[in-house]
Image (cartoon, rainbow, N blue to C red; front, side, top):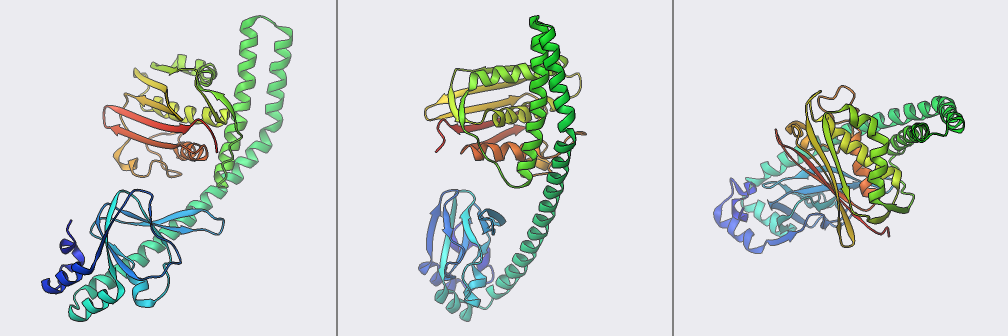
Amino acid sequence: MKLEEHPFFRSADNIEVAKLAANACLSDFEAGQSIFDEGSPSDTLCLVLEGSVAFVKETPDGKSRTVSLAEEGKFFGEVGIFTGAPRSLSAVAHTTVRIAQVERDDLVDFIKHTPGPIEQILGSIVNHLHGTTKHYIDDMLQQEKMGLVGTMVNSIIHDFKNPFTLISLGAQLIRAKHTDPKTIKLCDNIEAQVFRMVEMANEISEFSKGEQVVRIETVDLSKLLDHFRELNEPFFQKEKVSIELQSAPIEIEGEENKLLRVLQNLVGNAIDAFDEGESGLVQVHINDIGDFVELVVSDNGKGIPESIRHNLFTPFVTYGKSRGTGLGTAIVKSIIEAHGGTIEFTTTTGEGTTFTIVLPKKQS
C-alpha cells in the first residue's frame, strides 16, 4: 500500500499527511533482516506497508523468542517515541517487508496539527500490552509443560534402563546360540530398536531442556535410508501404504541417530495421514544440490488440516491423532536447525503434503 493509504492516517488532514509523507523514509527488508535492535534509541515510528515484522526478545539464556507480529497496515515504535525509553524488543523482518519510518520530531509536529492519530496510538499501546501479556502467559505455560515432559521422560529412562538391558542381553544370548542369518538379523533388529527407544527418550529430554547437541560424524545418506528401512520393515509390511526411499551415495556431516529421528517422525506422520487400511504412497528422495543436500518427504494423503498449518512446528500442536503428542514436528525442526538446515512444507487438502529439508554437507 502507499504511505498515504495507511490506516494510521485514516482521520488525518490530507495536507498534513502529504507533508509527513514527504519526510518519511521508505525501507525494504528481506526476511530475517534486522530493522532495529533491542536497546537501540526509540527515534522513529514505523508503519508497515507490505509484509510482516516479528518482535523478538532475548532471554537470559541467550536465546531469542518471538513475542508478537505486526502485519501490513499496523505500526510500531510509538511507545518509546513518547517515553524516551530505548527499544524494548528487536524488530526483524518476518517476511519481505516494506516500512515507512517517521522521525520523532516530524511525528510530534504532525500530531500537534492533526490530533486524530492519538486515538490510534493509544489503541495500539493497549493492544500491544494485551498481546505481550498473552504471549508471556502462553510462553510460561508451554515452558511448564516442557519441564513436566522432561521430568517424566527422565523418570521413564531411569525405570526402563534395567528392562532394556535385559532385552539386549537376551538378544545377544539368542544370537550366540543360533547363528542362522534370519535369527541374527532379528536379534540385531531387537538391539537396534532398544537403542532407538533410548535415543528417542533422550531426544525428548534434550528438547524439553532447549538443548540440541549434534555429535558430528560422517553420514552416508544412502546407507541411512537402508538402515531406516531395516528398522521399520516389519511396520511397513503391515501397512497398505507404499514406501519409496531413494538417494544417491551422498555423504554429509551430522548425527545419524538424529537424522533417523527426523525420517521416523516425518514418514510416520505421512503414514498416519491415511485412514486405516487405505492405500497410498510415501516417498523419500534425497538430492545433491552442491554444498547442500535436499531431503524431500511427500505423501498423497489428506493434507495437513488448515487449523494447524500456521503453527505446525510449535510444541503440543496435534490434530486427530489418538497417540500423537504434538512434539514430533517441533523436534524435527529443532534437529534440522541444530544441523544448520531449514525445513518447509507445502500441503493441499485431499492431495497430500511435501516436506522439504535443506542441510549443509559440512558443519561449521
